Length: 378
Image 1 (spheres, rainbow, N blue to C red):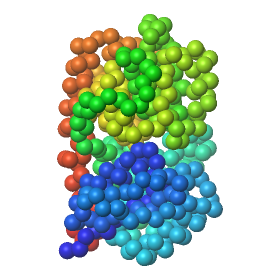
Image 2 (tube, one colour):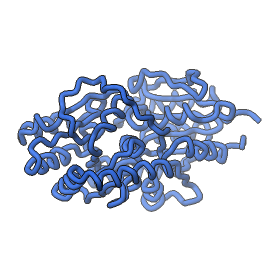
Image 3 (cartoon, helix red, strand yellow):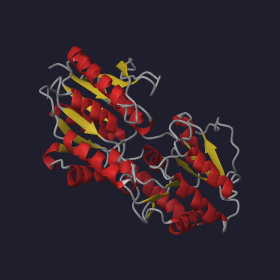
Image 4 (cartoon, rainbow, N blue to C red):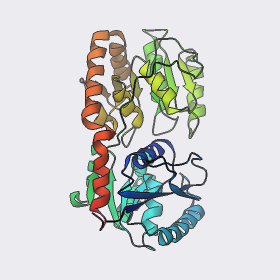
């Protein structure tokens, strides 16, 4: 029996990049042969498989935002690559990867597994744009497409709104390997107090960092020294200037530290030493930063959106807050911040939730089974 050849198509940034690297690094190389088609400028770090061998990669003008000329070029070049590689199946990651792969599959017929990692139509508050993006997804799902959702919320949204049937949809939760406690000092130059809360999220519509600044402003009324460490500023940050302006307007420069994109091991150390983790996202797939926080036994206070609600059970390992409810979020963060016993109980529950649902060592067989299910090599 030959190996299943899997082609991956994506714009490889942020959590999408993390997801692919974890799949490549953990799937059985005796059963699967991977190659990657991704953007020319999205990552320079090579992909490696389970044997630490470099995975074949092709770089095309695949951009995060819509670019008709580059998208058409990428589609035709992808068709040529598919005809050369002859994959048994395609795994398309993110909205742009899904667009390129599914249209290209019309030129080289092959089943496409699509993992949105948060649907693109959720990325705007403009009703017209939202309806257009949703319409595009509904059309594309008819083209050799099977949904492989990254969370239960995404799975349900794909069925209820995009129109997949349950027989044409799969669930593979974003997962990570357990994180060993690293006692080494944080290499990143620390400029914040020892008591702090943290988050990972680029300043963008999705992450809604403006709400987070409002939460810190509210909390400062009770704890003047409250401090937020915001990591992930530096890769894609369309709202950075508005966030900086808000911090300045509210006189919070001594309460919020912006940290550029740093190594994941350093992020783990910062999360591990924080009192708790927060998220104000408007939408998610299944956010790795919160999964990592669970693996590091952290309680979390998050907004009620896809992904977040899959990882945090209200009152069990943290709190789930109505979107844009600044006062409620600040009150819940303060409650956990000040109550060590409550925090310790929820930290224990977070770790247990991770071990039962999001441990990649237990879950990697699920994606391997999906790859085999949709090929003739199973």
